[in-house]
Length: 185
Image (cartoon, rainbow, N blue to C red; front, side, top):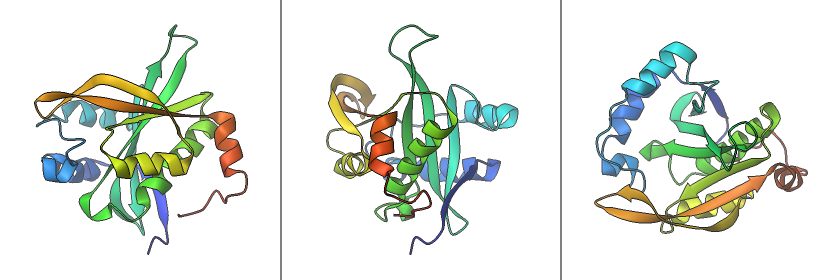
């Protein structure tokens, strides 16, 4: 039962849990396994700025107080640095938290958070065309498919296409006008 989902700042223990869960293809999934990667930069960002208020940011996702995964938002630009900022979001759920609606809730609430607390007009996300669960999730949140970014991601010994999705501030406002901000599903 998804009775109490929320975000909170990431802790050192969360990073330890993410390292344990995501440092294999079975834990990260075939769509997010890029080989073994150091997490020293994440730990330094946690120590210096709490993984918030930067070009790359992260919050922990919890269900009933238990760690379920993380959401991230990263600066992307489509032109001049000072005028063309948008956020690109990403999610990583712990294996036991997948397939329960947590990802849809978390991405919807992250978009809500970004449109409430930052001035961006656009939030975007990318995913592998074969990642049907993430495609469905983004569509439920209200993202629109913009196109295919060809051979954009090196993973598993070859280049992979990525689907580019986006949602604009007014589209999100319209999509969520009738829904409750505290909705857990």
